[in-house]
Length: 303
Image 1: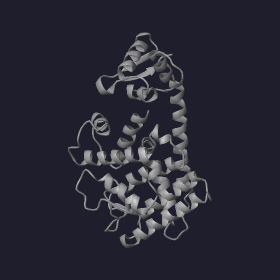
Image 2: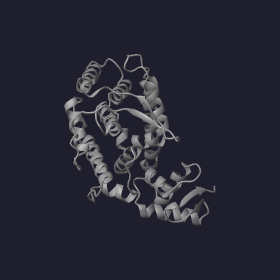
Image 3: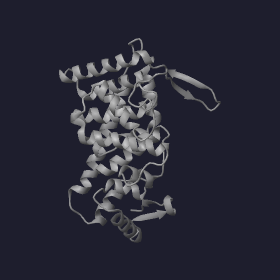
Image 4: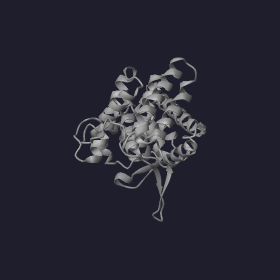
């Protein structure tokens, strides 16, 4: 489950920003079985490195500007980016492009000269509130991430850093579900909703009149959904069953068409060959119907 979640998180968080490669290469990069050959793969490898660091050392990574800058530097460690590990030196904007070609500025983050102090301030405030146990961490974490995105402290990599920091903050507060279920994949599936609630919450941020509640609800919903998925998947591996029965039960969790990869995510204890063999048997007995060919093969239940 951990390895599948790593692959999904790395793939989804980069895909949100338009950074993509093939499924096979994603897995090879995450498993460090190949070296990055182009810019997209270099960025993917950097995300992998930061995610691994968080998985293994979250309790030793304090929430300070210095450590956030170090994580950003690692994010770009496979490429020559002079701004890696440094706050932005040009004004950035959050914009939307429309089909007719015009671009609209939706939000203007802080200016470069304001950024270091603001980053220090949100870290200090977060540490104070968490340290004094003033507010439930699941409320404080989305507020911190929202402020981070409003500051938009880097020339590039703000979205990916925000998702990595979300994982880090959740781990440090004892919420480890992101290790087993990819939060980034859930965000990617509802990318439009993610941007809409963020846009709502940003209104009035400069004046201190923003309503961050939509973003809090969104992130809490994402975490809750991940815990439900974890419960479902754990139920399939909790009892020792033959591969055929595990895949049968996994297929009964799916509504409509599903792929071999969907079943693999639900059955992390099984090898790919075991899943393929079980699917063939279920098709042969008439429990499943198989459609398509090659990469487009999918299944659906007949019973």
